Image 1 (tube, rainbow, N blue to C red):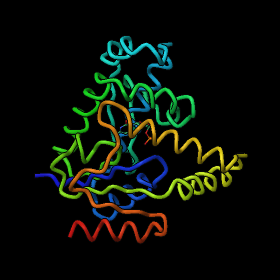
Image 2 (cartoon, helix red, strand yellow):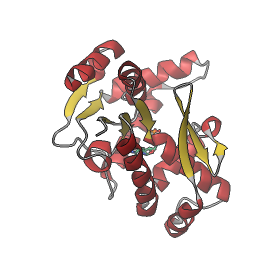
Image 3 (cartoon, helix red, strand yellow):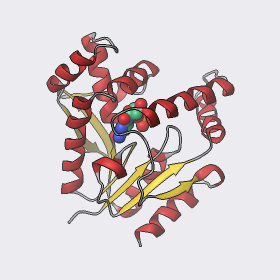
Length: 218
Ligand code: DC
């Protein structure tokens, strides 16, 4: 039997940073499910399908073959055989993804792939619906959050470090809007699973959060 750790939470809570660290310490595979949804979003953008065309999104997702593999411990996402890691982190792809990830056909396809990965290996998987829907029997479930102000500050500092100009108030507004959309969509909305442990990282650093989750595994 494989050992599965599920980490869910809102945008900017630090899920991927934490999940990567835990995967490294426990020698598990890190599965970034957001990257899979983003590869699907990229596919629709490239195909010229409109965000409002849910019927086309449901039909066309069957033609998008999404797989992942690991190079030097990093997850690489392939879209119809092409490594798309370098294309999925843009605002444009993020916006398309936020819309296409509400489509039931898209979710069905990616959830099946995620369940297969977790069945065959020990994984730390992060996303929005891992504890509630993808891996309801995960060994450890964490709902990782932080206040919208703290999440906006982290994002702001990340952008500043990259030399990009940004506005803290606008970033916080975007984060609140995205939470709203992720928590209120019809299928698999973001919420804390009943048996998930709530970890609020507003006043914790990365090491403390990692230690807390590792201690839950013991
Ligand atoms: O975590 P992220 O920012 O890379 O996620 C991108 C989008 O995908 C985000 O709008 C929410 C969606 N998503 C989802 O619906 N379910 C998941 N398990 C992971 C991400």
